[in-house]
Image (cartoon, rainbow, N blue to C red; front, side):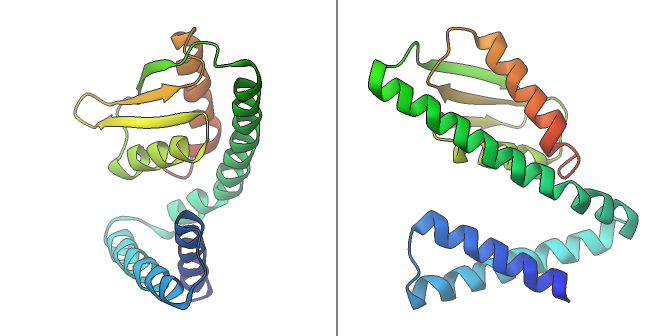
Amino acid sequence: MIGIVLRVVVLAGLYLLVVSSVKLGDVAIGLVLASLVVAVGHRRRAASRSDSSTVRRLAGVPALVGGTLVDVVTSSAEVIRCCLRGPPDPGLVRLPTGPTSPSSFAAWGVRLGITPNTVVVDLDEERGELLVHVLDAHDPDGVRAEQAAAYQSRQRRVFP
């Protein structure tokens, strides 16, 4: 029960961060949306997963959240550098995601969208790739390698 309440609070908090508001109506909408997401997720999980895999996945959440915060800080520094000096070589990069679950695919897109130096332009589940605009696209293979390493070390355990 505590886990469910915690999920609702975290999701509602993320919603409030996105809308940049703590008005009563926004809080209520965030709690309703978060409750619906948690209820649907709980129902789907109960039907398809065992408790041991859930515990293993939850154990990876701190690395995912911490790693995402590190990505936000470092990419914010890159944006500041670009504002002061000008962008080095902005452009679009295709990131292959490989065979992943829809939740993993969506989480990857959200995680990239949170960082200020990347914008997800398109998600193509059929081809298994994300089209991302980055501030420094002079080395697309380097961007792909960096994102693949971030996926492997942070996200894969939580969203396989």
